[in-house]
Amino acid sequence: MDSPIVLVDDKHVPLYRVVWVADLPHFCGEPDCQREGQYEIRLDVDDSLWTSLRGRDEVLTALNAWCGDPESEGPEEERGW
Image (cartoon, rainbow, N blue to C red; front, side):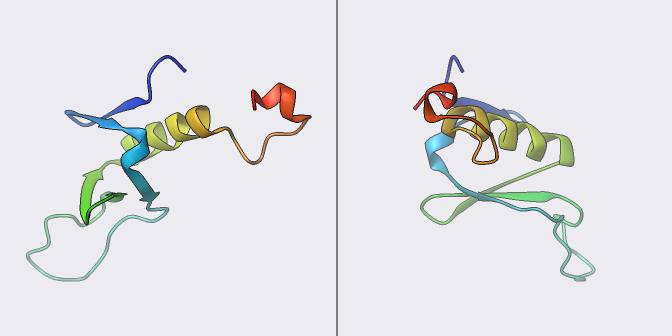
């Protein structure tokens, strides 16, 4: 990975700020909700970004490349640790 920064919609976000990524789209049932069907990317300091399924998948891919995929097989040397 060349850079620890990922593009979420029109924002360049440092990966170290990402706390968690929603697995399911937002649904609260409020009639005036503007985030229905979007995925939340929780950042540090009580901040969030909202994105599409494609944006969420891109962030997860970037995080796995940056941190290493815990599901990968093989010795630690192959994982780059």
